[in-house]
Length: 478
Image (cartoon, rainbow, N blue to C red):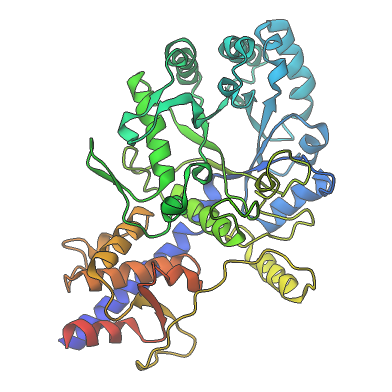
């Protein structure tokens, strides 16, 4: 009987891991993953080479531009990649005139479609943060007029209009249930804007950056690392990462105005791999953890506490490190790739053959580069070994039960299927925190690519060659 129970438990783990690897890592990621393609640099490759690289070498299938660069729009022709373009802020007042909007479309959009898959036009970028009264007053009328111009050209079903916002549009964001738009903007700008988005079936686009909102004390919370979480005392909902809190604060603000039926798109988010020493968590390891965990979370279908069972169209900032960007050093180091298109770090967006070649390039290069996160040394185990080369992530002997429960909450909150360890699930027994943590921690470790650092769990996890069925048998059943 003991052997049957342990074998069944092990089989369920294998099944869960296979399911996660085949669906969570690939199907979900390929669905709506985009990147911001900025060009404030003097060393970037030609757009045609960039387009070919994205198609042939990555799983990125959406690109957001900060302008309507002719060369870039031509480069993405016949690639199938969905392209979002941006109208510069200074053009917004002019777009309120129908003739100007029609001419703008004829010059900047019509020549490139349908060869280039342009799906969205953004009117300005974080306009409400400019404090420019003319731009702010013109924003919604410009969006409405540009949409009318699209209708006149029979392009409105193919191309949508929106505009991205910083989190500065919120006057209150913590706890998330109290999220509220800034007074004045809420009624006079955002309500008509949201009404326009509803009428045209367009998304509300925001630029959340946990990087700019975290401190040394909240770094784990910002990076999706295991942490104790934050409870919203109004809803009693547990938040295990800062991004969910930011998204739900926006959702709460939209709810106050009666617009919970509009999709939210993450137009920008990211983490720098280099910067000033005074900044918290500015390194390649943190950047890889944030962006890698971000992809897993937003594409998992788990949603947020206030918006469960959702995926979010997400655009990582940015495609390249841009050496001419103004501001502190971190601003020039948000890129996923160097200018020569080698990865700054690996988060699983390179196709497998390309990723292997990139690792070989990094290993042989004499030029220092940012590397993938430094692995956490795995503790040695005197336990009987399993099949050669097999590795699992298991709780350390003596690990605190409360810490292990936090690990379970974190993993399940990231979208890993925890159904098997819920009451009535095939892996619910033995019903102990340690047993459930073994399932959750190992499932996360396997799904994230079996990197050593994915088993750290605040130093409560250890990589082992011990077969989980043997581990569970010896720990819980015998």
